[in-house]
Image (cartoon, rainbow, N blue to C red; front, top):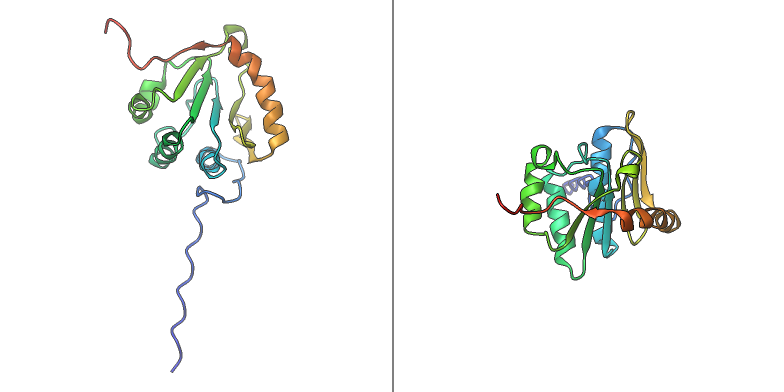
Length: 178
């Protein structure tokens, strides 16, 4: 009598913590890379996440897996998510679940509008303070890269720091008088 063959191990979820960064070569792989970037920030115990995009239209902000990871990230003490965009006008329409979710986390989210002169030159990227970088290099072809490179991350932080200092708070949770 032979022993039963062990069940094969399930394939790792490519968006799980500690997994190698995904290749960014399509819209869906960009979405996976964003979720991976947040999971990586959680895994490396980052304190600060920065998201940059002209309008976040193509981001997977209504993805339940992303909400779960962001909630776990922001529950930790002194965690912060900064979002820099040209404008946030379409967010409630394009990402209604994220818009509702952020109401509970408004104390840890900092949406900021870039100065008008730089708004059309904003990159598309996710960055954390531990070296995780997800960067969309070609928006029309969905080509980009994801990885952990502390030197690249530090340089990108320095490039964006002046822009962040010139930006203004945007996308309030509530509007007075409504």
